[in-house]
Image 1 (cartoon, rainbow, N blue to C red):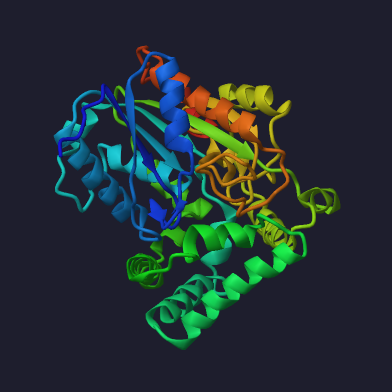
Image 2 (image 1 turned 30 degrees about the vertical axis):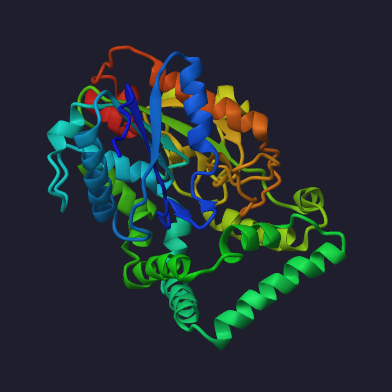
Length: 398
């Protein structure tokens, strides 16, 4: 079966966990359809493709995986390429294109460089995140591995433990319906991931968990100190436009708990969000270019304080290249994981009560489409376009 060739190819690169789809649960829920529609409205024929990558492996190996998959796409299509990375996926895209990078990939970077026009990063930790510093510590490092090993053991056991877990899932979805709690987070999880838990789906999830348990290099590499080294050694290629989308969540408290409502599962997840928000808001020095300060002030009415974040990544850490737009929302809202009745979207796995809705989703991805569709020459000598932090830009002028 031949694949239709589109004038433009837009590649969506996932972040942490790196999956494209697990059952009905998609990483980018509703993004491809919305972006294709927005690009078409601007007269651009585009095919939006979602790529899986390695869950928690090092950025170098994740970038090589991206390069391999994009190289395969280049071999069977024509026309310009546009890379969009969410969270760590934005760092993967930057490293995959960096002329200075040495990656374990057999793909010829030059052929890909010639096709890429834009790179868009969404909620990406360009200056790292304090959350990674916690999980890279002696206290936090074992948590992810223990979780992955435990869940993997359950999936490999084909008899009693897994059957009990699935039975409890069915029971919970029916019990909360009797209490008047319909379409809760647990309902969405069961329908999207567990209701048809055959061997193929089981093996896909088990493989992802095995990869997480065996390699968590990514966690350390997202600390502010490690990303600072990443930035110092990662040059952007000539002729590629870089843009960023930033997110800032509402600070959790009693008011946000009230607005979550009666869903006890959502309240529990909101408690998790509050803990992540506190860890992500630990002070990290984040200098900004004047142009970036002005852009953030236009979006939020102020330059967000250092502690402002989306529950995973500090807002000021998300700036790279041109600030395309921003929104009030948590780390997962812009990839379609928010409370909505739209078909093809997912549940709110990180409920922050930030007020993010369908209008915000359409607006932000419409702005991304505008950025992609723009046709202009890039001044590679402009440090604001290259995404340099303020201190690096000042050093270049000396």
